[in-house]
Length: 355
Image 1: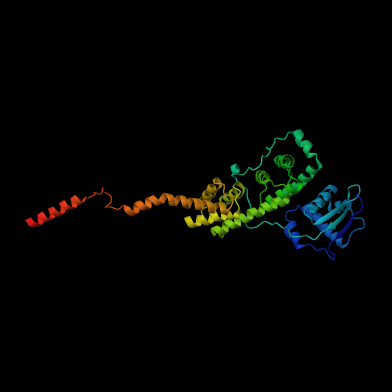
Image 2: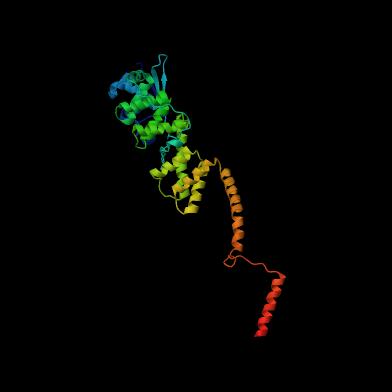
């Protein structure tokens, strides 16, 4: 390993650590990665003449591979930039000013909908049962090694067999990029979810939606967050949705594919009809709209018009009947002729004369 050139966007007169780094980058990184970054900050104040990967490894009691993994990790999250020489070896490190990530977790966190019957949008490969030979062959791939090492740091423990199987499935079968796999684990772990089953469920949800990049995954998270906010606002809830309520919202967004406007309209109608935030009632409304291929608010207005028109046709005869039906009309009515009226008059006169 040759000598390294180290530079930064700012002039360091002391070992200063950005609050942005502490708040947003340090919690998700492993301790060894943080140690490497902090030492680089220290070196900016008084860089040693023999700064190199080997020097960093000696000072921090890490292997050179560990140092390189840490550098690549920080490059991935864009707080430093690496340059390589003609031999592909790291020759320069530029420290960048940490910027607050665009997408951060909010009060309403997206979850995975268990309504699997409504989720599939694409044909996904089944998770294979890898043989020992297949695992060995895939594990010898340099990128897979790198991914496995990063995931170990995320989980703060060595990978178990089922962890490795999942990583191989994501990489080899679902064709997730290394960056998307990293974001997947960051996304789940930030919510306190480290189980393979949960992480796999999120991955399958993304795959069903055709998500292939980190940006698309972030946008999907924003969509879920917006959906939660819209529903709680429409229902007048002053709390985050519960687990069962989130499952309904997830199925409306992901399973039914409805826009936030359509879901909000269903919530508004639910309140008008039930005077309470009834998720089951709203689900019945949305299920009915889905069966009728509703895709916009205009489609809902059209259905309303058709329903009102058919209701008018059905109720018109009954309204006429209501107006003409009473307790006196319940008996058959007799029709009288002129002769009948004449006979009645004569009979009345005869009775009067007798009196």
